[in-house]
Image 1 (cartoon, rainbow, N blue to C red):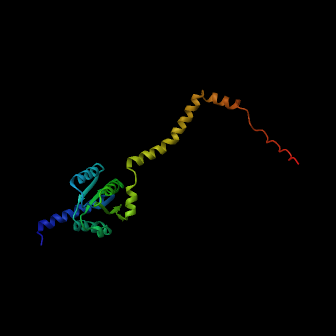
Image 2 (cartoon, rainbow, N blue to C red; image 1 turned 90 degrees about the vertical axis):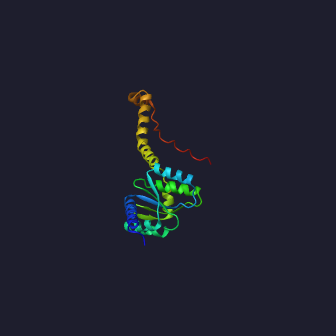
Image 3 (cartoon, rainbow, N blue to C red; image 1 turned 60 degrees about the vertical axis):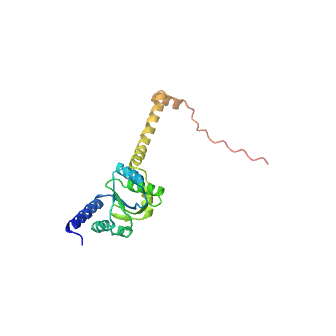
Length: 190
């Protein structure tokens, strides 16, 4: 039987994991088996740069934390080597980074994930991993907002280039009105 101090340490780890799972918007559970130290270091660096917390965990401790926060559907994948990546603000970053990493490393596998407190399937994880970064999405939205304003600015500049509103109005008046009646059809030759 483990000592009281070991049990207290494990309870503290479970409480910390539970709090982390509760406060995160997304989490991805992976099997990190078979990766070397150099690749692991690169992966951890990329995750840190994207504000993703990545930790190797014991399956039993993560299982107890899942029970506490209502993520029981994650428990079936908790076997073998397990690590969890969580993000407090970015929804797609962990899935994008870990799925891309799994493509290049045969033994590294994404096991499962959750999003806003609900476990998601592998198709959803894959779709989430294909979303562009937050910065790219914001740039696209900004571009969509700027497009009408830019078109208006180009139209105003074209008026200025033609000599102003008066010149454009005079040009419009000088153009002949092409409102002629359609010609009558000639009778068909017999």
